[in-house]
Length: 85
Image (cartoon, rainbow, N blue to C red; front, side, top):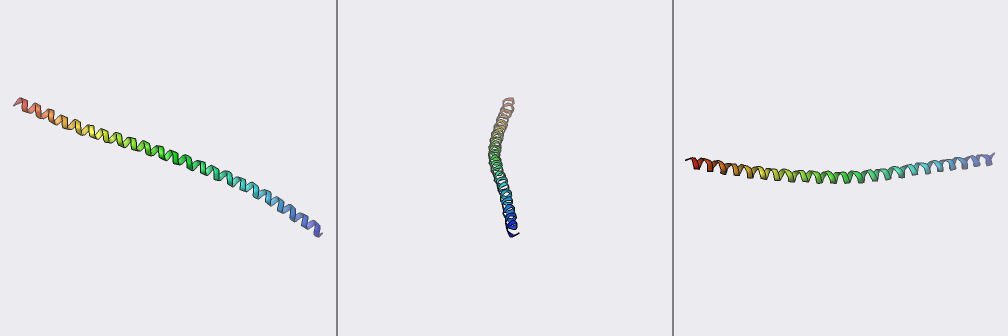
């Protein structure tokens, strides 16, 4: 009777070890998936930051051109006014 009980215990332990192994494999796969996803997120964030910086530079250039155009228009208007007088 005792021997049968010991065999059952060994079988149960073996079953539990197999389940633990399967769960550890699942955990490792999920960890790898998380790492991969985090790497992709980091790359995407860097790419978006680059795009934002490019847009900022473009805006700065447009503002500079706008200011230069306004100054040019003021000079042209003053020239027109002074030439009529």
